[in-house]
Image (cartoon, rainbow, N blue to C red; front, side, top):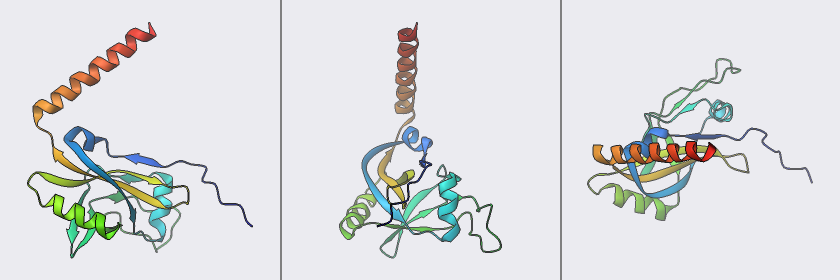
Length: 155
């Protein structure tokens, strides 16, 4: 038997704005339907999730505004940088997300993209509620206090 191909570069691209702007209620892992050169760009780490969001179209979940840079080594058969990409989930998970997303104030946010041990691109999505400004201030204060404690421990 042939050995499994080991992926030397670990890909873990996070949406840092999401945890600051949203309070996560539930998380899911979903597969992504990609075209040929998109997976190569993801393996190079050329993905931006900052403006992206998820939406239901005809009972299927899609991620919008996710930017995957064109693959540098491709010729004329390159992909579009920003397009709707279908997310792959179980029927039960899709139904649960669809009913929860209909509630007021809840939205579906892409949190991170990673490559699993089989070499497939996966996306972690979260059902979240937008934070108010005072919640964001409290998070910043807690972050500063934690950083200050770490500085004191090092000295």
